[in-house]
Amino acid sequence: MLTTGQTTAGTVAVQLDGTSNSNWQIHISNDDNTDTLYIGNGDVSSSTGLRLYKLEKLVLNMNPGETLHVISTKEGHSLSWMKQV
Image (cartoon, rainbow, N blue to C red):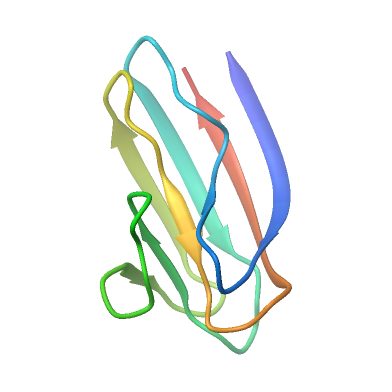
């Protein structure tokens, strides 16, 4: 099953597309052309997250029950994602 979405991140971590009961893959695109997006668990911050630089893309393989969160140093940071289960 394939799901997609577009959202914005801000200075509080937000979860992307829930969890799954099976292995899943997520593609993330930092659609912002100026700032870095930070990726991690629910405690992610701009000092602890994996950096996804402006206009960069990333593919992650996830395990059942895992969640993915994003945060930015500004409000209204645009990103898009595609989840494949």
